[in-house]
Amino acid sequence: MGYRVAVVGATGAVGREMMTILEEVKFPISEIYAVASRKSMGIEISFGTKTLKCQDIEQFDFSKVDIVLMSAGGDVSKAWSEKIGALGPIVIDNSSAWRMHPEVPLIVPEVNPDAVWDAKKKNIIANPNCSTIQMVTVLKPLHDAAQIKRVVVSTYQSVAGAGKAGMDELWDQTKAIYGMGDKEPKKFTKQIAFNVIPHIDVFMEDGYTKEEWKMIVETHKILDPTIDVVPTCVRVPVFVGHSESINIEFESPMDEHLAREILREAPGVAVVDKRENGGYISPIECVGEFDTFVSRIRNDTTVPHGISLWCVSDNLRKGAALNAVQIAQLLDERGVIAAVAA
Image 1 (cartoon, rainbow, N blue to C red):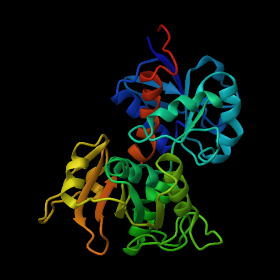
Image 2 (image 1 turned 180 degrees about the horizontal axis):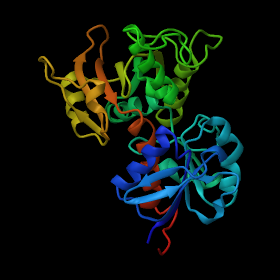
Image 3 (image 1 turned 180 degrees about the vertical axis):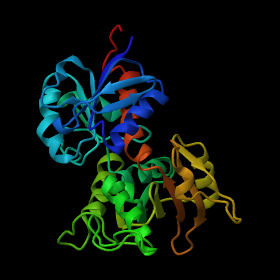
Image 4 (image 1 turned 90 degrees about the horizontal axis):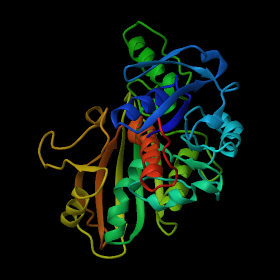
């Protein structure tokens, strides 16, 4: 028994990671298809011991699959997700296209798994923004224990969040510092090598960027609309792995000892918190891992009930591909869809 799965955007970094994780977690698959735009048709994609040839999205018959993992960008998702859903499969979309649609659930399995039952409304499930996913994974168990009142978060987001072009630009600019490449910004608004840029996505009228707005509204939809969220999103010269410094104010008593105890038992969270040199996790150490890592848990002495912490996560995994695969696992575990005979 297994599912017929199509990965759309299979030639991109996240699409390839989806393929890798589906194999790693041994998701029950009877058939798998790599799908992308016509220009990628015929490109070979590895899936375990198999080699798949990429198929053209315009010609692919989506009625023959059960689950579509969509990682082809917002424009492609807007054009295709509803059409695909109308043919029967459930689309798990990694773009921002459907996240705030009232009939589309926005899901982090460790946080709001029951929302998976809303998938049948449009046969679309939205995967949240990478920076939101790791934050709400950490906030959820703390919020259950002592209602969160306010969150102030500063992100340190890797260039992988901007795709291959972002990663190439950091590489080229780093070489250019030593006279071996082009250091002119193309993908980013300023030089990213040996620099940080407090600007991700477009600016909005209130002075926040769209990336910051996403963290606010997505946290409200996934976790609780009463939580005040104040984000500052920053791009940093790290290839893969997002980091966040989070300050949390609670309605009722919470301290570092209780927070540490709660987070040690939380699904999808790993605590590495020693008050010594190297007793914390940095982004380079989280690459390839499933968990969101939490360090530097400490009391905020400026408010009655507050803590501060540091968290890191592989943004190509938990921030994108892994969360999408975990949603597919949730569909299976909850019986929202049923496997077919191989």
